[in-house]
Length: 129
Image (cartoon, rainbow, N blue to C red):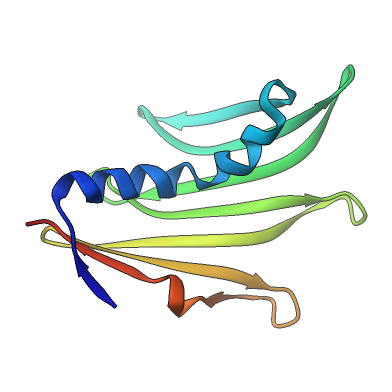
């Protein structure tokens, strides 16, 4: 699927995609604590903890990769599995740049196959005018 958008639309879409992890977090408002990891001014990861009284529990973990132009090329999200007491893969988003075109691919974790599986209906290609 290919759609033509303005440059402002592309920037807004990228901002929305980058904040996708925060959407679920906003429901907790002041009950989430973010521990951000930066390298050379770029956020490369963060761990989100849920506040429960005086205790913090693991909630979500995210990592980000960038290209040599400091454009995000991948974001990956893991959720805390309290039963197994370990992080579980959840979502991977990749960004491919070609000139002014950005293609965003979404992959959901398939626990049975132990691999991220492309969700083709969520693939978006945006062109700047």
